[in-house]
Amino acid sequence: MMPRPDWRTAIAHPRFRWALAMAMVAGVLVIAGLPVFFRWVGSRQGAFPPEPLLPRIGPWDASAPTFTVLYGTLLLVVFSIAGRPLLVLRGLFAYLLMVVLRMLSMALIILEPPPDIIPLVDPVTAIFYPDNTPFLKDLFFSGHTATLVLVALVAPRGPVRWLASLAALAVAALVLVQHVHWTVDVLAAIPAALLAWWLAGALLRRWGLRPGPGAV
Image (cartoon, rainbow, N blue to C red; front, side, top):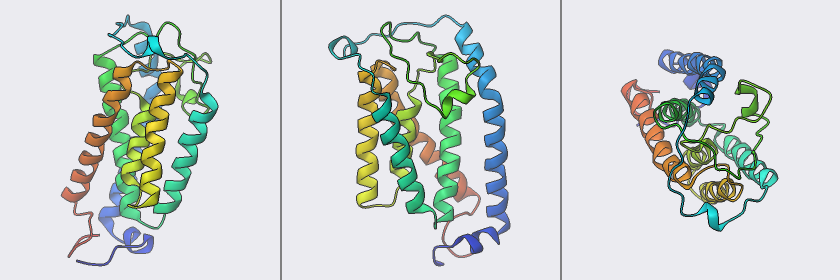
C-alpha cells in the first residue's frame, strides 16, 4: 500500500484530475437545474404524511442555532480533512449524489409542509430557490440532516467525528422543533446519506482512486 497522497501527488495523477473536474462540472449542472426543479415541485400537489411527533413539540424558531451548528461543524470538518484529497473528493461526490437522490425522492414523494411551519431561511440554499419567498416544499428528505450525516461520515475518526455526529442529531431535532420537516423526512435522511456515501466510495474504488499499488 502506498502512503496516503497529499494534494501535489493527487493532482499529478490523471484519474484524480479527471474525477475532480467531473465533480465540478456535475456540481455546476446540478446547481443550474435546482431552481427549475424546485419550481416544478412547488407547482405540484403534495400529500400530508402521518405525523406522530410534531403535534407534541413546538413550533419554535431555531434558525440561529441550526445554522450555527451546521456551518460551524462543516467548517471544522473541512479544516480537519483539508490535507486528505481522496477524502475531500469522496465527500464532494457523496454530496452530489445525495442531492441527486434528494431530487429523485422529492419528485416521487411530494409532500406539503407542516401547517404550522416556521420557515428556515438558509442564506446559502436560498439562492437556489426559484423566488425570493421561502420555499417550503423541499421536504422528503431533509437536506440539512443528510448533509450533517455526510459531514460526520467524512470526518476523521475520533473527537471530530463524535462532534459531527452529535451535530447531526442536534440539527435533526432542531428542524423538527421548528416544524420545517415531517418526522419521516428526517428519518429518511440518514439512510439516504449512507447510500450516497457508499456509492461515492464505490465509484472512487472503481476508478482506482484509493491508496494502494498503482492507485492514487
